[in-house]
Length: 415
Image 1 (cartoon, rainbow, N blue to C red):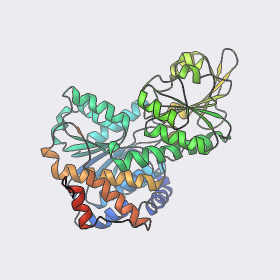
Image 2 (image 1 turned 90 degrees about the vertical axis):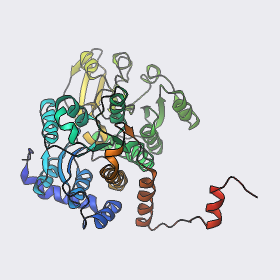
Image 3 (image 1 turned 90 degrees about the horizontal axis):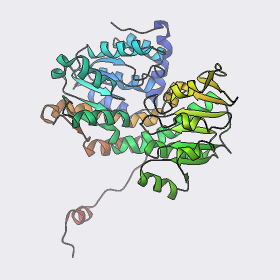
């Protein structure tokens, strides 16, 4: 039995899902190819990802291909109640609502786990870690899972190192069609969409500080530059820092950048990136936002301890008045700004990521029992197939190797 709010919003949710689906040609191709023979018939699937329209279209694709789907949100602020209502109307088990308390959020995940899944699609690792801690009796029924994001892979790899991971998990986040497009172009666009629609402020001419220069940070910095911002990058990894410098960005420690930035975006997947020390150096009016999975990159406890909460000048903006009168603005409660304060990645981008998830589930269903209980790469063929279908949908054709070229590339003896 689903647990959602606002059942009457289902028609609105259906319209949102339909709109997203119109712009997801790869997922539509998978539905056309597999809905007839229903390869997931009899398979119970648990999904814990940001519960919005693109995710819903993926869930609906699995349902059309035979799966029994239970779904919850991976972030209380990214759940869209209208979309949750639409999925419940589709006779899925849905446990989520926008603005859930921490206790409600955990209860929703538990109820999703208690459906007894065979396959799991995850964003952040909360469901899989809770499954191991609280429902060990259900572990033997799980064939495997797939993880969508860097933060989740950090947690799951730690479990694997300790020998605690009870089933194989596919690192979808590490697939090329995920990080090259979702992490870079998806995050790059959606972060600024969330910031701009929330603040209604000009980006051009401002100093933007991007923490972390992985694929997400690259995308955020690239789009900030395109919007006319002056970009500073902070990093702890020398190679990434060097890359940022060669790209033309200023690179410095956060302690130096704190006094210069107008807008801050954390993209590290780590904790306490912006601390009390840095908050004490901020300009009056500095805007803090996070694009990492959990709300731990900005030290919210330190921020509250250095001043008083002064209300919300706009939706999704919390104003803090520091003791010396400076104002600091926190967007989306320090949660993922592109989802807490926006609609997340574009549909065309999530089309690629969710096609990879579909491939990961097929791979696990066919081979999961033989795979080691580790975090494993998604076979490259799924990247190639996904990219090929996307190119076809875009009306783009490319060259193919001739027999001579193929033989040349396979041989070490060249005349």
